[in-house]
View 1 (cartoon, protein in one colour):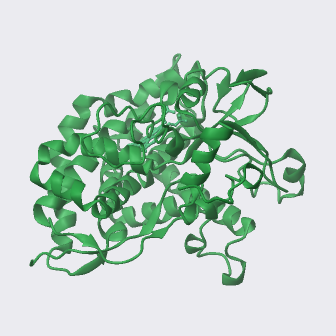
View 2 (cartoon, protein in one colour; view 1 turned 135 degrees about the vertical axis):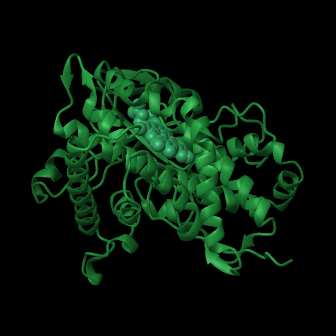
Length: 431
Ligand code: HEM
């Protein structure tokens, strides 16, 4: 329910705490109803931006990649030019995401680059990988078998996506924990828990967030520079870094920068989002015991349950675009250069598209949610993410049907990733 005091003029979707305390749905509902294309004023450092909260408008923006480009940043509002000068130069990714490969590219280069790795992500590739996904899942579940209480995020949800994407990239198992840590630093840089290299009294500030992100990015780049060097000397089969090294666009090999950015994107995109789909999925099922019971009784509902989990959880809060020309959406004048943020959790509860959008229904059909975006940049890994969720819940509920929440989830402080850092659960295996 909307809090009675909520006013449009108080709304600031650039406030990560709003998402940490799960207050965003009230705000998004108000925006959809009263200001579906809403100017969110900037701050001292952040740009102002347009919040797009209706399903159809997000579809429109995403499907016009020349009018709304990704190359000026895909996350957050960006930094005001005046503020940039006063920031330590080089210490701030000016336009978050602008340099991370295809997700920050525009037509026509975007499609050419995406095609290089497409083969690794087709339905056939996903099907071929399913036995391996199931094997890894059971290995993860073997480790928790016999335990009573545990942190589902650290011990289960994070482990499967990490193993799958690290496996596709041919990374050694000893390095997976480092990838987990670096992904947290880059994507969760605003959360004090991941600002471990910053003195304790400075944690929680925007300077601490910048330092943490830069450290994560720097270490990851160094790591992948070594991986690429290794694959140049020892090419492997079915290994994404090798495929990229051997690829050409318009007769030219990829530059070192392009190669690094691609590796960087794959490890980031394939990791945290899926983790939050799994942890968010378990949470919502436990919070809706009737739906969990229904699923346990008929596991053939799993595919539609996964879609409903994705709609409900929306592991990414937003993606950003920048307008290249003056345009208009729902009567609002958007100027060339304006930043536009598309709020997926809002699209996925749009009353004009979903019947009873606030009801969690694992049999919902149709369920054309936008959790993976839409159009030119539609999630490359959607097939893998869906299969990982499906296999994880099949195996988890087969082995631990009585699993339940055992404490309050700890949420990530971020308006970009809809993250859960810790989720205490009880396995109740013996009951
Ligand atoms: C539940 C899990 C996931 C969610 C919710 C998710 C969500 C998204 C969204 C919303 C986009 C669109 C970006 C835009 O329009 O600007 C995207 C793009 C992308 N995702 Fe995912 N993703 C997930 C899992 C994965 C996995 C497992 C991988 C890789 C193995 C992956 C790789 C990518 C890549 C490479 C792009 C960029 C595509 C492009 O720009 O053409 N994602 N994802």
